[in-house]
Length: 305
Image (cartoon, rainbow, N blue to C red):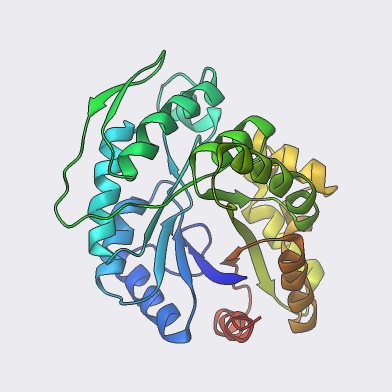
């Protein structure tokens, strides 16, 4: 199992681009496999990956995830190629639907028939990222174009997929999925069987399973879970994540998060390996003095596992 680090979803690093660059350089020196950048309301994730990728040599960068609705798939594919060049071919584009709260209430766009939207989106962006022309006309999206980005190579595509319909689309059109607020039991019994079946039917390779989880290294588990519950409370109320928390049998993000001392966290990480996770995306929440460095040390020691 590869081990990467999440940036942009917790307070582990600062909010500026140089904070990301320095975090990425340190992660690369430590031997981590990847950096995953959340696209919320701070840095643009695709653009920020380009800047951090330009300043590093080996580590992979990916978005976890870029919302589709505000971006035409042709424009996002063009941006992804450009970032791929800046990263020296080390960029993975992760896309997702976001949530009705964001798309309708904040952007003022329709969130009607999201699975249908994603299916049309993938029928445009997947071939474009494979450097193929597209001539597609759907009910929500249309594209008749080819991209010619000098120096670009194909960009791997991942889809944030949790429900059966989205997992079928991810397995059919992409290289895998990126999860959040989804525990090992749900990944093993729901995520992996559904996406693998879709990939097999489509004649695609076994999908990549990138699992994002909050991580807190601490001896005060009760206090830590209280903080996690407050910081990540919103995820317990968003329908797609709520469904995964219910599948896992936990009340909310505080109960799902990996929280405890080194022994507990090592066991939790092993559970993800055993469940079939290919990439662990650790969203570190540093609650105590020096805990960020200690957590990085712990995760670094798991790289060979």
